[in-house]
Length: 62
Image (cartoon, rainbow, N blue to C red; front, side, top):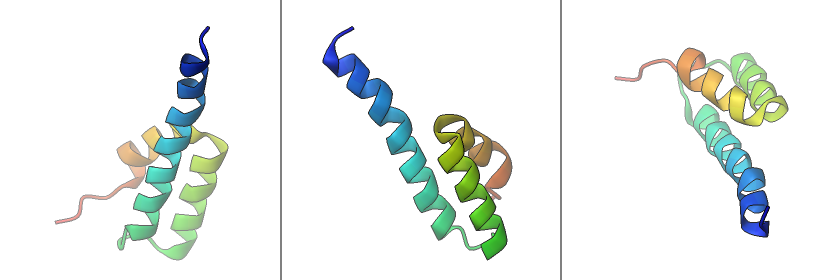
């Protein structure tokens, strides 16, 4: 595998996790304890945690 593919495999989940943590901090509908729980899930399971958060944890904001 080339270096670029390996770098992409490392940085893509990291970027997704960082954007998800940013979204969790900006989410006004979550309590602080819920935010802490979601951040722990995203850090422990970067790509899967982000997907789980966006499907189940993020509430619709109108």
